[in-house]
Length: 248
Ligand SMILES: C[S@@+](CC[C@H](N)C(=O)[O-])C[C@H]1O[C@@H](n2cnc3c(N)ncnc32)[C@H](O)[C@@H]1O
Image 1 (spheres, rainbow, N blue to C red):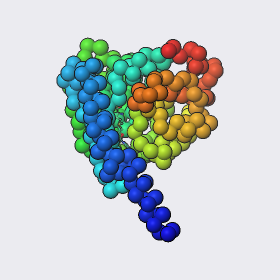
Image 2 (image 1 turned 135 degrees about the vertical axis):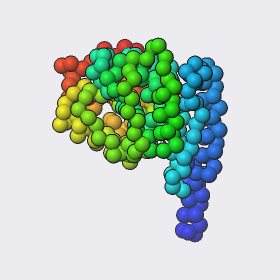
Image 3 (image 1 turned 90 degrees about the vertical axis):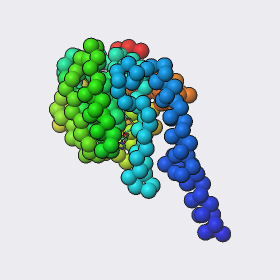
Image 4 (image 1 turned 30 degrees about the horizontal axis):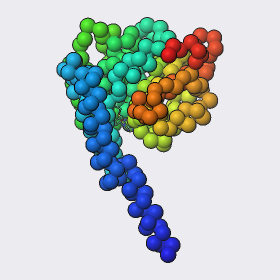
């Protein structure tokens, strides 16, 4: 009886697992249709001759898949435009940068440097190619640094930073990333923002003693367009803005 119940639970877990054999292809299909519809509206790749739209799943372990879908460019550009960033002072770091869509959108803002960290070698190489192709007149930063590595091992520098996350990984890696950012902010207090789109594990940011919530936005019924912005507490309220001064 106990064994049968356990087997039933295992089957249920497998059916509900987004990385499992049932939901994984369904999710891929949904995302494929969604991002291609989005591309018809935004025409990002069509305008810039890049290759960022199609989703991609990489299975490194039988139980774990790395799933690439591009950031919604219009949402990202809108949110970056609301941040009070001093020109050429901040670095933009995308952990889980995939084919590099978010890096390209960020390059239309005056960042000092743009860093992309991606685990998949295949996606990393496509991102390198996209960075070479993306040369719009509106580009304001061409200092790209692309690294193929685990985001959990990324060491933050000492510059003011915008950390960008578009639903890149699970709770365990996110906890390591936020702990690393916290340690960096504690040793070098400075301005920092975390922009987390599709914030599945927002509770990890909520628990951080180094970060405070500034804003959330996007429609609840479109989780891929929902976002939260957190800011470093170490520099507030003296120089960094509070939620009220981030424009909507
Ligand atoms: C939803 S995609 C986001 C892509 C990109 N940030 C964008 O907005 O266009 C998530 C990406 O995170 C990558 N990823 C997952 N776990 C990772 C890890 N531990 N370290 C680095 N990248 C990771 C996946 O391979 C995938 O490309």
